Figure 1: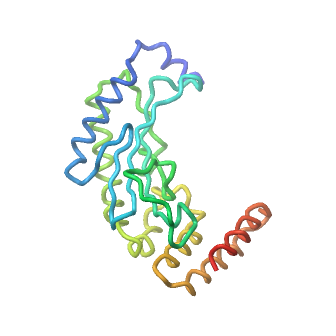
Figure 2: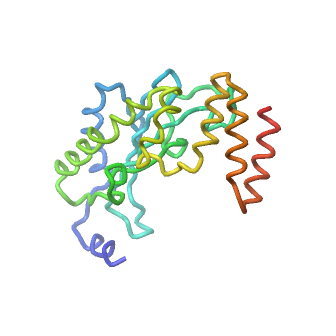
Length: 214
């Protein structure tokens, strides 16, 4: 709390304007890679319907984090998000980071603590730090995980991009089901089911999900 109290004593910052400036610069850097801008979200589709997301999140003043910014990272695979082998929902123009199954933040992806940028610092320095970390850690991971087959083969190689890694077996079940390998999907579902111990509420959910899948 002392750290955030110190931030609150700094000069007033026009947060929306400053975040706009940072996001616009990062977007200009990423636009050649196929990203589009939707509000505070930069988004691109790979393999037609897999989303890769970079989201700019302002800190909440009510939690003592006004004037701070973090950058969220995510990958959304439709069947993993919807828990259905063949999702029926109409594909949207873009998806939010919180709709992703594979998720992390800048700072963490580089092996450090999550980074909260102080918006009263020099904007050019913040932009430089964000683009460098995205170039070094995020884009290579996004490129390596650009299809269902690639995610099945390489997801475990990027643990720092994956704070929901406890769901890998269930996600892989859904991907194999989407690809038509129902037997492999059943095998992975059973492995995941057996790995869930002491969580009756979650097993109840899995029992209901199994009735929909098989």
